[in-house]
Image (cartoon, rainbow, N blue to C red; front, side, top):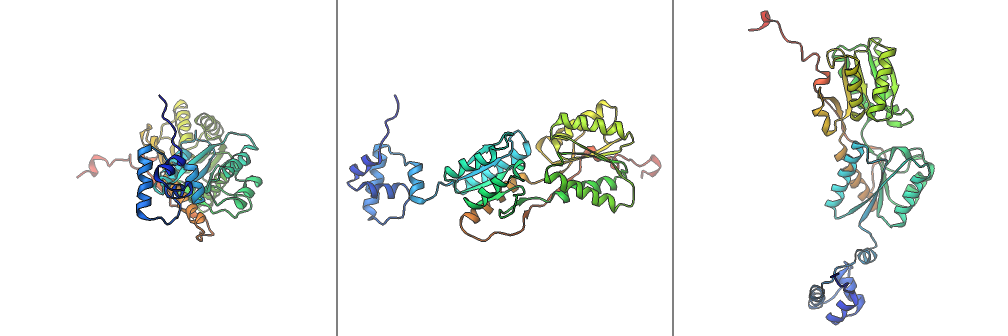
Length: 347
């Protein structure tokens, strides 16, 4: 049998108070009542099995206790980690997160942001790189709701949180040069993305100051293993002397490792591979994947904290909040570690 809905009016009648007084006591409003009156209202609610209405609570508090999160695609495991970090941090503050996952529709971004605004979310976190040049979305985020973004917002005015992708590339390229690699290819994400261009600039800076001709070309892929496998195959066809590959994501590195295996190139003996992200599976590939760790969970939490400061009217940094990245050395770039001393050198 379905549970009977108990109205607030019934609770007020049982407690012998007005509807307004019962509403303000049970839905979290700031109202002064005698302690025995508050206790009588609470007892009536328990006896009747009344559950406070979350919408009514929001109206009293003038807050929905909900933040919106616009996600590029939860098929991306890196983005899914960011969303998890944001949701866990929001929960610690007693907040709910309403996630909207985008597809490829050009108009969809503005529609999704408008829908979240209409739901009266207290703020919005944008984690959708495909919206970074969207003028309409940028205008909505600036004008109608406190917002924070993981990616560039056209025209500025929205605080950013993330990591330095130039530094990601610098760490990867310096590591490969230290290994002695001199024909370093790059399997990049779509070059229309700012994160990709930042990584390419960082890699170019390291190469330009290395004093050697080390660049073996760039192939653009689509963030998928299959696209990366095709890109790596094309690169090696053009530059058979490649001795290292810098890959722009762990997911794409799966495809690169597969392509190198099919082409008979041993990793790391013939070709060293360094990637970006440090997703959970990276340590369990064979060979295990050297990668630049990006703190997705911490970034999600930092985005929530920054958003709550905006919602509360507190000042926030004008410059992007950048969390540190680090190189994680594993077998895919362990060529120097594989060198063993001869018997004569052993004690």
